[in-house]
Image (tube, rainbow, N blue to C red; front, side, top):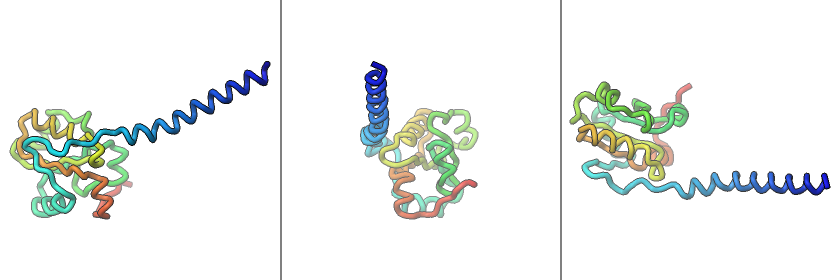
Amino acid sequence: MIDSFTTIRFKAVLIAAMLLLFSGTLRAEEKPYAPETIQDVVIVSAEEAIEMILASPELLVIDSRKKTEYLKGHIEGSINILNTQLEREELERIAPDKTKAILFYCNGVRCLRSTDSINKARSWGYSNLIWFRGGWKEWTEKRLPVIVEK
């Protein structure tokens, strides 16, 4: 009886472990795509983002990813503000001119963090918003320069 109970318990634990293992894979595949466009927002490629950053060193670049992701690598000069932590007062402090250009990015087309941040900024009256939709994925795939925090 004990052996049978142990065997059943072992199988249950094994099945649960397998479900957990594969559920992460399923969730990654189920992640929604960011929208193709956002009304009144300019979408740029990695190359266009670089051109803008080089042409306007004062351009505000907001990385909407998690802090741990930002520390592993980010675009030089970008400020890390997670979309869920972006607050009106903070954005108004770093960008008091609501017509000033602000470029947002996150992990890429399967990430909605920058979309969320842009929608917040739009609702607060910011009008010169730029979206690097390809985000970190496109940036690293093109082997563009990154800053890594130590």
